[in-house]
Image (cartoon, rainbow, N blue to C red; front, side, top):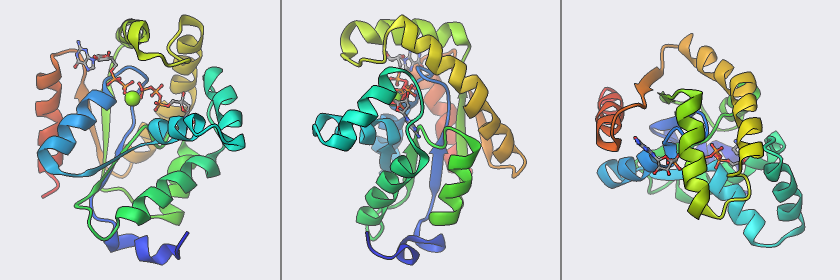
Length: 199
Ligand SMILES: Nc1ccn([C@H]2C[C@H](O)[C@@H](COP(=O)(O)OP(=O)(O)OP(=O)(O)O)O2)c(=O)n1
Ligand SMILES: Nc1nc2c(ncn2[C@@H]2O[C@H](COP(=O)(O)OP(=O)(O)O)[C@@H](O)[C@H]2O)c(=O)[nH]1
Ligand SMILES: [Mg+2]
């Protein structure tokens, strides 16, 4: 990995964290943000799943953790994000970082090693809505963690570890809360408004 300072502070413009519960619709909204704004989308879950698919030793360890609905070690995710950001730092208009930070410490380490985010998007969804969407997605996703038992654990962990992240950034005034209960386009219009407010 090249020296971090290349990717520190003003070099990384528009870092947007997308932190919400599983099944709240982050992935769906991220696609629309990329189409409209051309930001670089980095999904921490996708990066981890790519490592699992590679069949590496590290991937096997990650797979076991993710199947249980737990969080993988902090440094693993952060290194992957950092590598992906450095690879795009010269050409990117901004980074949309999906599924990160998942716990307050992940946010603190990101700032130490990479930089401060300009916005934290948070889709507020009811537990019932998240479970319903994930169970439906599980019919076709092939994801080993889209099953009833793991979904329950992911939700518990979300309330315990991830919700405090929102409070942490609320103190800085960069959180935009978005209501999940409308259509995909209704949710997106709230997302777009939050991003436009950055300019
Ligand atoms: N910063 C992160 C991101 C992900 N993971 C692990 C735990 C998650 O359960 C799994 C899958 O991550 P996703 O972001 O894909 O999972 P979600 O549960 O949020 O589902 P999705 O975003 O697809 O709804 O990877 C992690 O440990 N640390
Ligand atoms: N009704 C409704 N369903 C949605 C919306 N956004 C996503 N979904 C569905 O909910 C499921 C989870 O969405 P996904 O984007 O994978 O959520 P993520 O887990 O937060 O990344 C998918 O099957 C989507 O089709 C929405 O705004 N409204
Ligand atoms: Mg997703």
